Image (tube, rainbow, N blue to C red; front, side, top):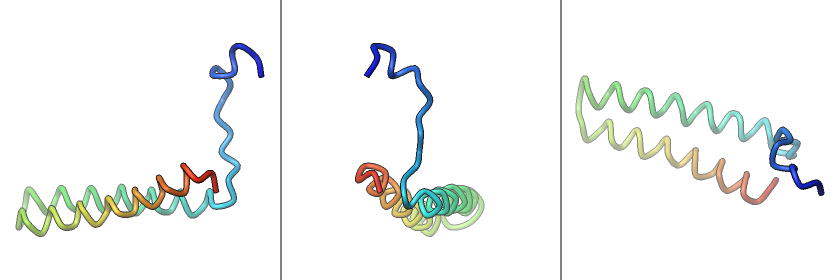
Length: 68
């Protein structure tokens, strides 16, 4: 490994890359919907939506850490 390995682009070639991308999309959409709901309607429900979308991110993070 060269001294400058951190300058090389990250190669994401995991088996579950597509699943991780979809989980990230669900997370981002859920976070946006939750924020809009929080500021326009019921704050408690908005927090539940945001918390639920965070579950998608935690699953994606676990898959990325496990390098699947």
